Image 1 (cartoon, rainbow, N blue to C red):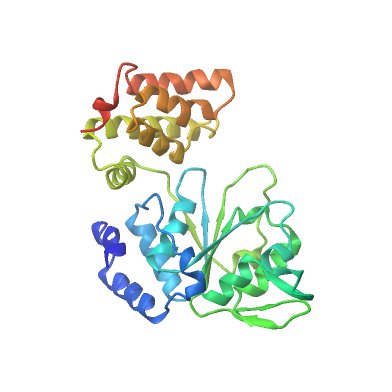
Image 2 (cartoon, one colour):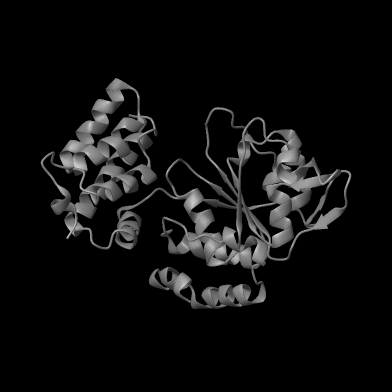
Length: 305
């Protein structure tokens, strides 16, 4: 299958790929949810991580992806939904997310009260992959819903309505960063419902793979310098010299993209990376990193064939 080519490129276990193909054939996507099967904008690179995640999902487990910013947690979650050809439902937790947001709320329609289904309900109904973003920001009301949904019962009690059993293809993938405002430690009962994958930092190899897939016309020297900008910022952030505000892989890739429109690489990186921090001292450090890698006189022709 073309969708699984990038797994073969990374030499992911042929047995796992075969089982994924069997899973895809076994669980067809309902027509109502077909529009939610989305090809990710960024491919995920990492053979070991992919094999662990795929094996867990094949055995009916839910995953919790942990690690610092820009390690590709959401990218992996989106890629897994695409690999398994499942509709994805994204829930971004915040302090006001409650059980009604997840399961659904009453609404008045056609002169009667009906349930407006929430993301978790639809995920359970259609066999989707629920991406639970920043799960460690969930408050107790929302966590109580997750406890029942994620354990061996695989069912949801909908207050005032009936119980719904999870579709056999439904899986949940939680993501969490440490130390952000509003986050908290996950309780043991919730963590026990997941297999946990600690995401490694980006490497030169992983970045070059992403650039090659997304920008096949880019020159190898330019790719090396753009990847180097990210790695240099990542190193300084890991050492505590700067914050992680400018450590933004999406911003770096967006900069690469707008260079293809004709903007100078220097200006593109100002928009995609440098200006992500609003601290003047930190901005100087980021500019120095970019300056050592990307000459100001570079043009589109220096980046693309």
